[in-house]
Length: 289
Length: 315
Image (cartoon, rainbow over all chains, first blue to last red):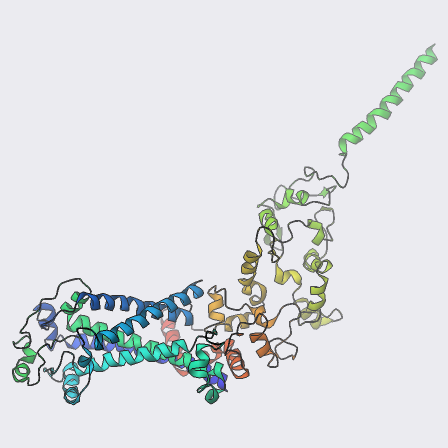
C-alpha cells in the first residue's frame, strides 16, 4: 500500500509542479506582459523609460553575494533535478558533490544574510517585517499587479507582497536545509546519521521507520525545490519587467542612477496621487521587485 | 654384357623411383607435426559465395591458425539469405580474460576441415564454459535458466530459448574481473556493470523497459556507476523467479538483498522492511503508475491525436 502510495505521490508531484511552472510562466511572461501593452505600462517602462526611481544603491558586497547565491541556487536546482531525473550519461556522483558544495555555500550565504540583517551597519531586518500597515496595503498591491488599479501603495522599501515572498524564501531555505540534511544517511555523530537525528525519532514511528521517514522527507525536499523554481520565475519576471535598471545595477551591467528625493517627486504617473498623499513613507524607501 | 647393362639400367630406374616418389610426396605434404604453430597452410575463401574446401592440417594448439581466416574483417558467408560475418577481433580476445585460451578450448567440436561442418557449434561453444567453471555451471543448473533436457514438443522449443553461458556472458570479449598486475579488474567490472541490456534486457524486454524509477533504473540507464545492474538485486547463476522463495528479490529476502553484504542500503537508517518493500515495488512499478495516471493518459491521447493528424503513429 505504502509502495503504491509513494509511487503515486512521486508521479503526481512531477505532474503538478511541471504544470504549475508552465502555468506561472505563461501567466507572467505572456498574459501579464501582454496586458501591460493595452494598459500603457509597457510603453511607459520600455519605450518612455519611466522606471521606478531609487534613492539608494545596494553596496557591492550584497550584489556580489546575490549573484553568487543565484549561481549556487541554479547549481542546486540543476544537480538536484539530475539526481532525480538523470538526463545525461554519467555524472550522478559528481552531481551529488556539486549539490553538497552548493548547499554549504548557500548555507553560508543564509547565515551571512542573517548577520547582515541583524548585526551589520545596514541592519535592514525591519525592511522585511510585515506589520499592520503593510497588510492594509495588500489588496491595493494585488489590485495593482492584476491591473485592477493603477496605484501601487508605498509604505516601505519593499511592498507587502515582496516582503512575503522574501520572508517565504528565507523560511523555505530553512526547510530545504532541514529536509536536505535529513536525507543524509552516513553516520557522523556517535554512529548516528543526520536522518536519524533530525527525523528518525519523531517522524519514523509515524510512517513506518526511519527509512520511510526519509522517503517522505525526500518528497517534501523535491516539492520545496519546485517552490523555489516557481518563486524565482516570478522574481525574474518582476525584477526585469518592473524594475530593469535596478536589476542591471544588481548584476553590475549598468549603474543605477539614484535620486535623493525619489519619493518626494512624481516618478510614475500611475503613482502621482498616491505619493502626494503618502503619509507613512520611509525616508529611505525605495522600490524594487 | 648386354644383360648386365640392362640390370644396371633397371636398378637405376628403380632407385630413381624410390628416391623421387617420396621426395615428391614430401614436397606435396608439408612436414609439420600437430604441435607446430604454422599458420600458412590455410587459405581464405575467395568470396562469400565461392565454394571452398580445405583439408585442415592446422595445428590445434594455437589461435594463429584460425585467425588466418577469422582475422579478416571481410570473412563473410551467405547463409539463409543473410550475410554472416565470421570476423573475430584478435584485439578483443587479447584483452579478454580468456586471452591465453586456445580457440578449440571452447570450440570443442571444431571439425578440422572447411566448411566447418558441425551441427550446433554455437551451443557447444556457449556451453564450453562448464568445463572450467564447474561451480558456476552447477549453480546455473539450479536456477530458472536451467534447460529441461527431457522436454518434448512445444516445451522443448521453449526450453531451447533459455540462455546458455555465452548468451549472457558473451563470447570473445569476456572481461577480466580478477585483479592482475595491470589493474584491469576495475575496468572489467565497470564494463560488465554497464551491460545490463545485453545480459538481461535483450530477453527480459518488459522488465528492462519498466526499470526506470528515479534512483535505480533511470540512473542505471544513464550510466550511473552506483546504480544497481539487474544482477545486483536478482542474483546471477542460480537466479529464480521473484515469486520463488529462493529468489533474492522474493519478499522474504528483500531486506537482506538490499541492505546486507554488498547491499546498497546498508547505511544507517535506510534498511527496514517497510522501506525496502515500498521502494522495491517502485523499482519496476513506476511505469505502471505513470501509465495509469489520468493526466498523463489524457496528454498521451492528445499527443497521439496530434501525431495522427501529421501522419505519425497513433500507438
